[in-house]
Image (cartoon, rainbow, N blue to C red; front, side, top):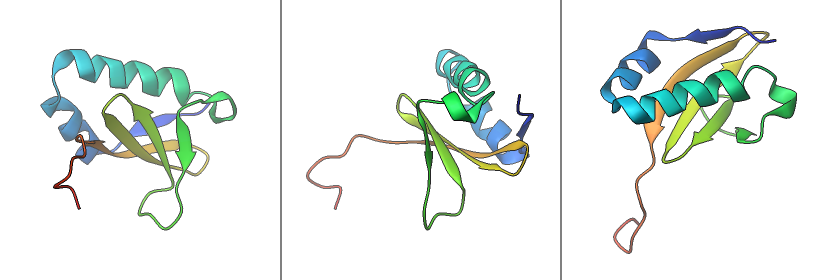
Length: 85
């Protein structure tokens, strides 16, 4: 059972997201990050500011793990098109 700590930046970002999507993110965090060994949508990141990411629909929840989970940032992933690159 991992302790989940929300950083102030992540809480501010969560407040800006609509209520329905925010609830989905909070539910996914409590469901998936309680036990990282059974988490399905968690990926370890290489060469990134944060250690891990959790995928929730069009959003990515970035976090670090050092005995306790520290949620650092929530970012929306927008649809890519021919003008992306």
